[in-house]
Amino acid sequence: MALLDFGGVQENVVTRAEFPLEKALEVLKNETIAVLGYGVQGPGQALNLRDNGFNVIVGQRKNSASWTKAVADGWVPGKDLFDLEEACYRGTFLQFLLSDGGQIDGWPTVKKHLTAG
Image (tube, rainbow, N blue to C red):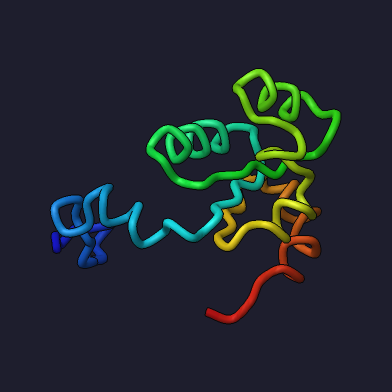
């Protein structure tokens, strides 16, 4: 663990040496990571996870510019690209990466798919 200072708050953070990629892949091998939103943050996180061997799907509004970008980046509708509702249903981990306004609008959809633990 590394002790990091975040604006005067010190936190213990797990390092890559303690939790390498191989361990993360093993821990998450039966999980589906749903990246919700493919605007500013979504592409980088979704592509990085996919390229490193994780099971990733993308949730995005259909017929939007970001949907078109996701398709251009190799995400396949009905296989690993879905609307938000379907991605929330299929994902076991949800990364809520919509814009601030999008998060407000999308919260009711996401909230009903959250479970304890």
